[in-house]
Picture 1 (tube, one colour):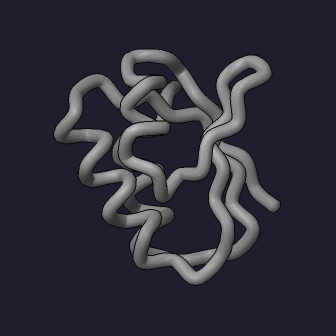
Picture 2 (tube, helix red, strand yellow):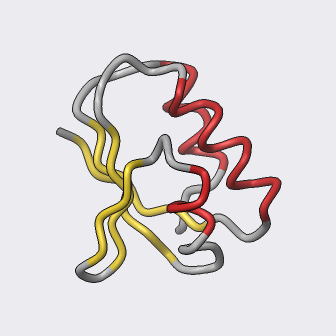
Length: 74
């Protein structure tokens, strides 16, 4: 499992991120403090907009990895 920190700043960013996550055949979690949200849930991820969150992937997909890099913090 690999963890990356990202920040989604607008609903359009959330839409792009969730769309990319939905194409993956493995579980992806978005973690903020003690809150864990399924990355394939638009409303769940939208609730965390503007906060730096950790993305925990249980697999690898090059397209999704490029999406994560686009929103990476730091």
